[in-house]
Structures are given as C-alpha cells and as structure tokens.
Image (cartoon, rainbow, N blue to C red; front, side, top):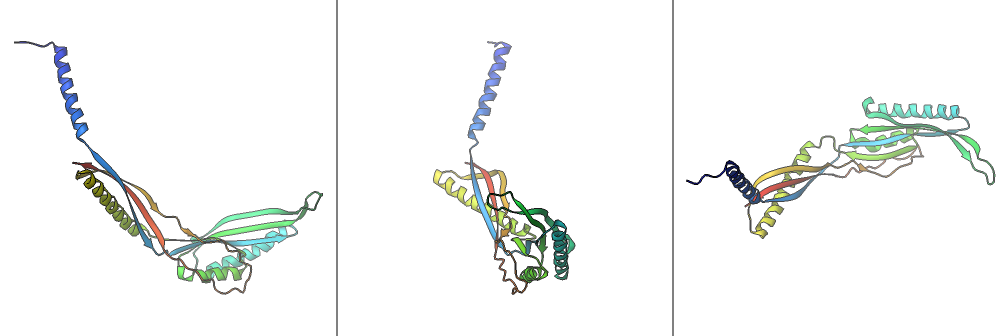
Length: 233
C-alpha cells in the first residue's frame, strides 16, 4: 500500500479544508438595502430665549436698569407657571459702546448690558400669551423660538417599523429582478433619528402694548433610517 509522507498528508488535509471553506464563503451571497421611515407628530414643548438689553452712560447704570427689567421678566415667568428648572440663563454680557467720528479716535459713548434666559414652556397652548407677557414685563429680545416633542419614543418606534418595511420592499424588488429570493436577515443597523426642534424666526420685541402673539406649532417629522442585510438564495 502506498503511504504518503506526513507532510504531504497534512498538506492534503489543509487544502481540502481550505477548499471547503472557500466554497462556503463563495456560497454566502447577500443583499443590503437602506429603508426610511418617518412619522409626523404635533410638538408639545416650546423653547424661547428671552431677555433684556439695556444701555446707559456708565456700566453700573446699565447694569442697574438691566437688573430691574430682568427681575420683572422673572416675575412674569413665575406668574405664567414656568418652573424654575425650565428657566436657564444663557447669556450675560457687559460691553462698552463707542462712537466713531470721522478722522478721530473712537469715543466711549456708554455701556450695554445684555441678559438672556432660555425658557421651556410645557403648556404650548399658552405660548403666545407667554411671549406677550415677556414683552410687557420689559423683555426687548426674543430669539430662537423652537418646538419639540417631549416623548418621541412611540413615534420613533413607528418610524422604525416603516423603515424596515421600506427596506424589505426594496430588497424584494431587487431580488425579484435579479432572479433570487431573500433569505434570513444577517444584520440590522439604525441611523438617523429624532429631528432637531423646529426653529422660528428671530423677534425683537419693542412695544409693551402688543397684542397676544399668534403662534402655530405645526407638525414635526421624526425620522429613522435602517440598514438591513439579507442572505439571498
């Protein structure tokens, strides 16, 4: 009987295993698609940055005027039912103001003090009235109005389902056109997610006798993208 050397036998076994492994790798065919799902939700939270800008000949005078006006703003926020946790100072600044006469050095004209707070309003139906109260209290700066959804999980889960359905639909179209069928799912990964709050334009409030501000929250898009890979047969 013919006996192969030990090294030759080992090489033959290795080549056999490697060939089988290569065949298995070659047989694993996949298709990957991305699906998109989105849901429209009505915002139930509004945020706004409001504050006071004061000018005076001296820094101390500007600061005193600003402090008085901001105390009135805080009182108005409390009267509107805004919780302390929903009021956060977002900017405080004291800076000189100069005049620039022609062909002369800049001249100190006074000082400007700015104090802003970011307010979260959880009763969105009263948001327009809140803006009006802020103006009446002395706020002359209203910036960055935005709307958001406080509990987006249920809507995002629905968006995820729609994203999977979208990816599966497209995968079936491709598989059918290529003459193959979808097998089990190999991988799933998610991208995208909750859209940022919808911003509104900047408002500079200057009149204390303005009418209640009309506010429309509209709808917000919550979107999810999902990437799915299937085996194909």
